[in-house]
Image 1 (tube, rainbow, N blue to C red):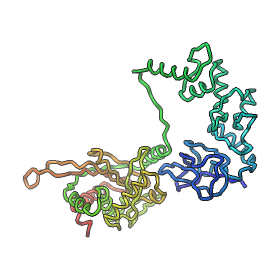
Image 2: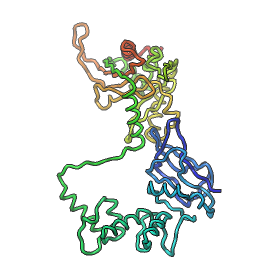
Image 3: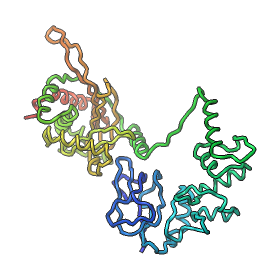
Image 4: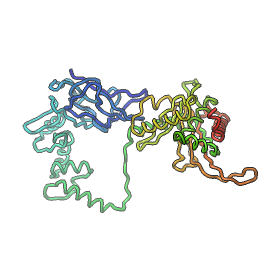
Length: 430
């Protein structure tokens, strides 16, 4: 019996996902529990396993398309099973709206007349408009005629442009209006390329704009940052700390296992959060949730956006354990292997821009947390100590806190305690 495969809900806040890669193609046999496709959400990319075994009969949502949770993405069934009942008007409407051009290889959804193969929607459009499919070149899988081929043919015909199907296809891909190509004979693909080349030469030096659609991760980041900016009355505190002793501790610990400043700051911040619980809290309705544990998120920059994997119970872990976990989480983030548990449950976030030479910035709070600490570059700075000028490695700390919960004095005291631990890091080993 055929089974409809749906977009799974991979996290509590997930409402939609983007299919980035189908690991099987139509006609392939799929084992139950075998990876079927990859989904990109606002945080990570996950492989989705098939809940049943059988032949992948039809794909409704193509790579790069967004699909809401619980919506159908594919059908799995027996090889020769009649799945026409699953191909109702709602499926056809979905194909028309999203230009889903996948066609089932071995099902009644494939329309074939002699050597002509076309999708149901392509056939319907051709029939309604009195078109002969034999004169249309298909650009779908294995040369199959799909919706875009019929529409492109109709558009070219309406404009009374004589063009080969491949010229029509190429013009569509390059966003070229065929009516602008003046040719007495039939326009071929090479003519479209030559036109683009000529226009590029003419347009050289002109001002141009390019629009790039937001990916799913960037959309969610934009929404969450807007939520943070409009909800939390944020205050940013800046304070410099002498990292002389912290640098020495880092070098000593790195003799056995490489430790970074981020690792050390995760431990420092976790210790300070336990002492200042309001920095470690969150707001729910009219209540403040206070915690006796610290889950510290560490922002990791990716090409497509930002993720924040979380070191759980960082206050109760040793430096080496934290260092190992931070490295593992960062690697999982860069290889899209984070699980939901890896990036949820954070109570406070650290974001480090020191490696980019930043001296100060205003980090934005990651909801529902109420605080975030920005780490800046370490700069050798002349200081006057006991009447003498000495050079000290100084790091600027940038704390942003939600003023609904964190009063100015509390925020200042917390940052002063972080500074104290940085300048006297031996306390961390007690």
